[in-house]
Length: 264
Image (tube, rainbow, N blue to C red; front, top):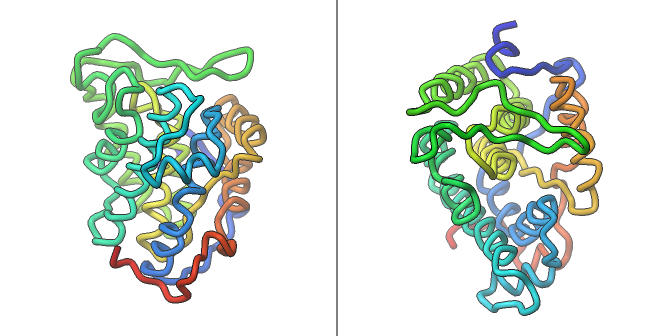
C-alpha cells in the first residue's frame, strides 16, 4: 500500500478503533490543565530524575536544587514546547507541516541536540546519521544525513501527504505521525518527544484528547518501541497509545474551573 510505503512501516488498521470527539476548546482546556503531567511524563521517558512536584515547582518559575542543569533544561524545554503547542492549537495555527515540526523541535531540543529547529543536514553537520539504542543493539534510520536534507524533506512531504489523504480517523493519523517521526529520525535528537507534540496537535485540532505516556509505563513504552523499530509493525504501539489517551482530570489537575476556557 502506498501509505505504508511512504511512512516506512505498517499496522493492522482493522484493530484501531474509531475515536470519539469533544470540541477543540474542551480538548485544549484539558491539555492546559494537565500540562505539568504531560511534561513530567515526557521527561520521565527520557530518564529525567525530576519528580512530578519538582516539575510543577520548576514550571511555576521556582528553581529546584540537587539536579543537573541539563535535566532542569530538559524540563523547561518540554514546558516551553507544551505551552507553544497550546497556543498553536488555541489560535487555530497548528498545521501538520515542516514549519510547525521545526518550531516545536527548536523548543524541545534547544541546547540538547547537536542542532535544533531544522532537519539533520540543513545546518552545519551534514555527515552524521544518528543511531537509536535498542537494548543491546541499535537502529539506524534508512535515510542518512545529507547536505541540504533534500531526502528528508521529500520523505516528510510525501509522508505527511499520505497521512492526510490516506487516513480519515484523526487519532489513527496522529499516532501514525508520532511513529513516522520516531522511525525516520528527522532530527539529531528529540524525535520522539517532538513527534508526540505533533501527535497531540493533530488530536486536539480535531477535538480529541491528547495522549501522554505515563511515567509508570516507561519500561513498557520502551519495550514496545523496540519491537516497532525491529519489526516495522506499529499495531502494538498504537493500541498502547490508545490506552494512554487521557479520559478525565484528577481533582488536583481540574482545579476549581468547571467550564473550559482557553483565553489564558
